[in-house]
Length: 392
Image (cartoon, rainbow, N blue to C red; front, top):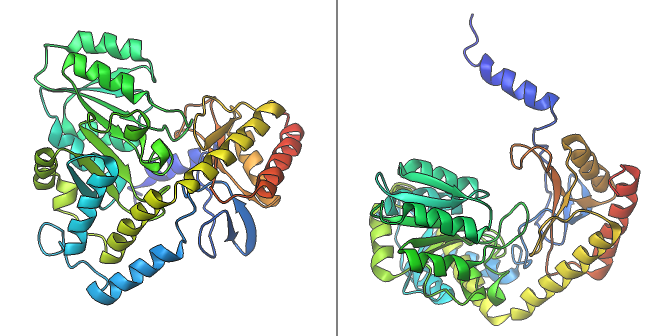
């Protein structure tokens, strides 16, 4: 019998030979600065849980109270039978948090991008996209069937050149960028992006998934650059620094109403449980009331990066609590990760196709509640292992 999936099996075997497959580790408890992985306690350096809110008792309590009042499931799509008053409160809170007229929650960050982008631009329009934008942005652009123009990473001169080329030739122009780039930890200069957009009549869309809870005293990249009232579409997630789940979108009221009525991922996908809504509401309140969490996160980030840099590691262009150690070789990056794991440190190797070949790295992600002892242990392990593997 002919194996009709042999071509796929061949591809995975080839990936395994190149050591480009993911090794999944099982957590035996909640994620935090420390967590249990396959029976052993380790220091977690591979989580987006920047503010250590994923296991916060206030989020759990809010979720449990919502279960008691609303049950577990939402019943259907929000647009059909699952839209509860709790969700309306969340939409208003998102708008307040992001400094806009209106907010909208989605099931995931990915569904926010792939649902929204095809509705705000389409055939005959043009998107200018940073070359290192997240895959969910790329998929959203592909689904939109719009023309796509790539500008060099964070290069405002190249962005302006591209804007000059498309200005007046398309009815609608959209500039789209990540706020914080998840592989390198660098930041889009949204004030400059917005200035160019205004000059050339382009809309702006920023994916702030790694910005909420991190930039702008926790409010995100719009607040960081004081342009929250100018960005047309602020997209984000609850699943990273905010420690919960789901995506969000913020902008002016009429535009958000349009997206709510047209985005297929919002209209045609089941709502997340009311318990998630309640946790999302609570976490926005916590970030507003506890700015010291953000300060601790940045203190830890600065201490850790300074330590790596002093040892001679290549930390790339990191400007945030995402601090890569660029190794430049798949097998060596994975060996560094495995060795650190044996020393009680969970770090993630990022290899092709997540990053270009030759830029393979370990992605370190700091937590507001890592202690100085935690950071010193990780730095000492890096120094010893880096020398053993010939990285430094």
